[in-house]
Every structure is written in structure tokens, then in C-alpha cells.
Length: 341
Length: 293
Image (cartoon, rainbow over all chains, first blue to last red; front, side, top):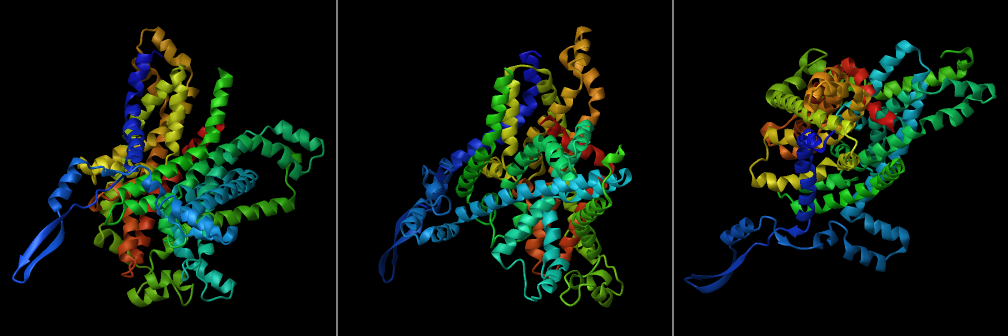
């Protein structure tokens, strides 16, 4: 295809992506370097019957004018990155200097909003991803050995947790694990503890969110692995059997190596998606025990005062996190590409 | 299972069937439970006294005289005007799917028929864009949208969702177009068609399976979105998911959590129907990206 034809075919989608993905990224980076203007104060002499006093007042007109002239606010460099709400350089340094063992240091760190969110986001990403791959693989093996007629029905119901909006999925589970809901009361009976509430403890809240994450994403892994099983070379499997391989050995030495590229694919997609965990925290009403980077951005943007600069800064840090997670893929694709050329 | 040697032993067969049954219960039971419970009153759905109340609806009978009540649905659809959110969602989904497929097919077709170096870079850029959490982009939109008075209206959200959707659409359609033999449009060009005419008369008639599958995923993205729509739409323009989230803020305190339950069920039903009719397309779409590696 000629360059010119390609250009016209590709223009609409390129424009959409440039304007609404590339430009916002630039805008976020710029925004994170500015803070809102301080209010302009004026000293006013207030004279009454009992003499004159000096009062400090907000000069609304001047403040508005300043805002209109420079809507971005005033330049602050990396200040927001280093403040308490984000990387908290000063606090981390103090915590390190006055640390009480490594555990004590991490505990202090856990009280800072950014590190608290980071801790949950990373724990969530790196527990949910392997668990959902294992569950998805087991379901795929199980479904593959079912009768042909049953497969369709099983696939239909297996798709449901993935297809519903994450917020709705988490609400449905949240209502069931409520201490008055069916799972909640079942657990109370099981552990003989009538006051047991999953919502009250940080550890249990994390477990709950991770269980939700696996429930939500396992169908994706299942479908991909199931499709992979359909292309399994039967000859290899049969020769393995003739050589005396047990069923476990067949799985380990034939099926799993065959599915390995798919495992990498699912792992990469899910690492990216789990890193942005956000809706379950809203759905489970869990922000007191677990926050994520995306949730901080959402929280800063919502509410009465929209903390645009703070949200932008967290966004940039999130994007950096995504970039780090994505870098192995990019390096690999780059190598493949070079090998082809 | 073609050969006898591949047959599973009875023990293994039982274990694997048992496991699938457990998985099915895990996957499907929450939905049926919520559907059933949405026709009860709150004291049955959340029953401190006896969990069978949620099944038989003891309080519901006491309060309304029947074991099933549409109170939650009436409250959500009539009193809280959930139908407005449904209409908004329908509009957003329709326009997102149409627009993103139109510009996506053109772009992906060009990518699949060009062998220049920049195709690789464009696809990689799309992959990077796909990895961006949408909420981080939203913080970049707010300031300009406020400045230019674009905040709060449906078209803004639609175009934003289209753009966020593009990277995925491009990747998926690209792999579908690569499966359509190049000889088809090349022979059309030999016969004197321009590239666009070749696309219009030769490719469009055979591209529908891939386009329908991609369209389903665009639909799901628009339907499921919470981050963008909750931040960029004003209260009266809200779509279903942010509307449900707003129920939690206002009505949970009033004891009307059943409104939220009813609207959750209302929002899930269309997806049920969608999966029922398009199960094969969804499965093939999920695997399309994977099989290529």
C-alpha cells in the first residue's frame, strides 16, 4: 500500500488516539508540574466608630484574574511528586532514620497514602494473576473432558463473571458476603463467630478483593486455554502414552508446554488489567482497608474540590508503573522484530 | 475423546466433573441468588434472623402480602428514574460501536495491507495505549473539558470511549484482516480498482464475522465502563453503571439498597441475552489475539 493511501485510511483512528490518548498523557504530565494559585490577599483598613483596624481579605477579583491568565496554576516543579500524598520523600527519610527494624519501617510506610495504595495494588496484581491462571487452566482441563453437549452450557455460565461490569460483579458478591448475606452468615456459622465481618478487618478485605479478582478474570484464562486445548497435537499425546507416561506426566510434559505461549499471553494481559484495579474497591466499599493507585486518582478527581494536580501526579506515577510492567513485552517484541528484519 | 486409550479412569472423571460443578456454582450462583433476591424486601435479602427468609420471603409476605414484590424495580425505574440511565447507556453504546468500528476497520485494514516499517511501530504504540488505565487519562481531560464547556454531555464521553477503545479494536481487526487473503483485493486492483474501491467492493462483503466480534467487545467496553462515564457525565446524563454507584451513596442510608439490587439485575439481563446469542463470537474474539501469540 502506498504511503499516501495508508495515511488517509489511518487518519481517523490516528486522530482519535492522538487527541484523546496521547494529548491527555501530555496534559497530565504538564498538570502534575503545576499547583493551584494561592489566593491573593489584600490588607484593608477598616475604620469604624472605635478606630481603625487592619484586616486581611481575599481579593476575589485579583484571584479570578490570576486564574484566568494562567489556568494551569503556578509552576511547582517536582514538589507535588515529593509531597506527603505521593512519594513523601521527607516522611520516608525520617521513617528510615528513626526506623524500628525493617518491619517497623514498612509499617510507617504503610501509613502514607501512596505507599499504602502501592502495597495493595502490587499484592493484588501478583496474587490474582497466578491464581486465575491456575484456576482457568483447571477449568479448561475439566471442561475439555466433558461431553460435547454439555460444553456449550458450561461455557455460557463460565463467561458470566467476566462479562458483567466489574462494579456490578463486585456489588453482587459484596451483598452476599455482607454479614447479613448468605455467604456472610454461612461463614459466621462455619467459624462459630456471630460477630465475624469480612468488611471489618484489613486482611479479610484484601482476601475478599483477591477472591473477587480471580472470580472475575478466571473465565478469560479458561476460554483462552480451552481454545489452546483444541489445537493440542493428539499424536504427541498418544506417543507419550505409548512411552508409558502417566496422566500427570502427560499434562506436565505435553499439555503445559503446548499451552505455555498462551500462559504468557494471559499473564501479560492480566498483569496490565489487574494493575489498574479500581471498581472492586468502590463496589466493596473497601477504601478504609485497601486503596489502589487508580482509586487515589478517582478520589482526587471526585468530590467537591477537584484536586487536579494531585490526581495528575498520581496518574503519571501509575503510568510509570504500567511502563515498568510492560517493558519486558516491549523488549521481547523488539527482539522478535529485529530477528525478522 | 477419539481413542479408547485417552479415556479417563472413573475416579478422575468423577473428580473432574465434581470440580466443574463447583466452578459452575461459583460462577453462576451469585447471579441467580441476586435475581431471586431482587424480588424480596430488604429485610429478606439481608436477613439477620434466618437465611431461608431470602428464599421464601417471610418478611416480604408480611409486608406486601405476596412472596414476590416489584418494589425494588418500581423504586429504581420510576422513583429514581433509572430508565433515563438505560436510555443514555443505549445511546452511548450504539454510537461508540458504530464510530469505533467505522474508523477501526479503515485503520486496521490499512495496517494489515501495508508492509512498511511504521506499521510495527503503530501497533506497538497501540499496545502501549491499550495498557493505559483509563482513569489516568481522565485526569488529563477534565481541565480542557471544563475550559471548553464540553464536560457532562454524552457526545464527549462517546468520543472518549471510542478513542480509548481504538487500540484494542485495531489489534483485533488487524488479526482478522490478515486472515483475509491479500490476493482478493490485489486482483481487484489489477482490474483497475483504487485501494478504496477494492476495500469497498471486495473486503467489506467478507469482513463481517470479524467486525461483529470486534463490535461485541466495543459494546462491552462502553457498557461496562465506570471510570470515564462517572467522571465525564453530569448527573442527568449518567449511564447505568455510574447511576448504580450513585444509588449506593444516596440510598443505602435510606434503607433502599433494594433499588440498587433491582438496577443491578436490570443491567445484567441484557448481558445474559448477549452472551446467549453471541457466545461463539465472544469465545473466538477472546482467543483471536491469543492464538497469534
